[in-house]
Length: 403
Image (cartoon, rainbow, N blue to C red; front, side, top):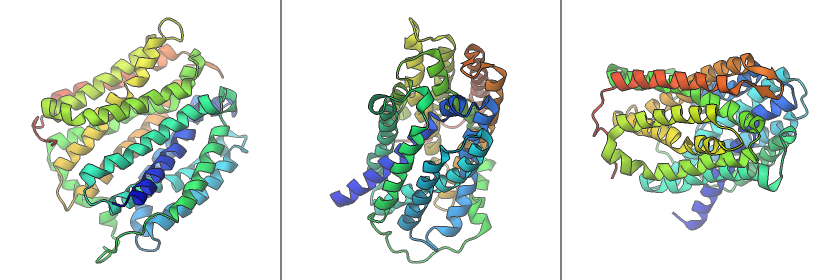
C-alpha cells in the first residue's frame, strides 16, 4: 500500500472514532446537568445508537455499492451528521433531544461499517494490515477524551461543547472522504435480497450448541456494558474524580495493549477461558466502582477504568474471532453482522433501558445518586452470565489458533 493511502485511511479512522468518543462518553453528564434529564431519558438516549445499529445494515445493504460509491456515501452521511451535531445543543427538551439524536445515530451508524469497508478494500493482507490502521480509531477516541479535560478544560455543566467538537470533526471527515481512494472495481454486484441483508446464511450456526450459548451470552453481557457507557462518566464526575473524562481514556489505552496480547493468551488459554476472564474483569470493574471513591480509594476507580481493555478485548474481540472460526466463506460476513446487531443493537438497547431505569430509581437529586446500589446490578447480571456461559459453553480450547 502506498504511504499516502495508509495516511488517508489512518486519518479517516482517527476522525471516525474521535467523533463518537467526543459526545458519547459525556452525553449522560450533559443531559443530567444541562437538560435536567432523568435516568430513563438518559438511558433512552443511549438506546438510540443501538436502534440505529439494528437498522443500519438494511440501509447499507441496499444503498452502498449500488447507488453511491462508498467514499461518497461516507462523506454525505458525515456532512449531514455534522450539521445535526452542531444543531443538537440548541434543543432544551430532553425528549426532543432524544428524537434528534436518533436522526444523528441513523446517519452515523452506517459509517462504522463503511469506513471499515473502505479500508479493507485497499488492503491486500487484512490480517496483518488492518489492525495497524484500525488502532488509529482507538487513538481518536483517546484524543477526544483527553481534549475534553486537558485542552478545553470543560466542566460537567459545559459538556454541550463536546457535540460541537464532534460536529466540526464530522464536517472535516466529510471533506476528507472526497480524497479517499476509490474502491477497487468489482466483477459484479450481488443483487439485493432480504435474506442476504438479515444474514439468513448465518442461521445455520445455531445448530451448534456452543454458538447458541455464546450468542445469548453476547446479548446479555451488553446489558452491563451499557451501564458503563451510559453512567460511568456521570458517576465519576459526581464522585469528584478530577479530569474524569480524560481518565476514562485510560480504558482505550488499555484496549490497545490487550488487543496486542490476544494472540499470546489465545494460544495458552483458548476461547472459553479468555471469554470467562473478560467477564470476571467486568465483575471486578463494577465492584471497584461500588467501593471506590475520589479519596484514598481512587485507585479502585482508575482500576475499574483500566480493566476496560480486558473487559472489551477478551469478550468482544475474542468473540469475533470465535465466530469467524466456525463460519465459512458463504456465511462469514452474515455471521459477523448478526453478532454486531445482537450485541450493539439488541443487547445495548436492552441495557440502555435497564440502566436508565436503575439510575432513575437510585436518583437522590439531579447531581446525586445511590451509586453503591447502581453498580451492584450490572455486577449481579455479569455473574449470572458468567455462570451460564461457564457451565454450558463447551467449545474446543484449540478452536482458534492465532499465528
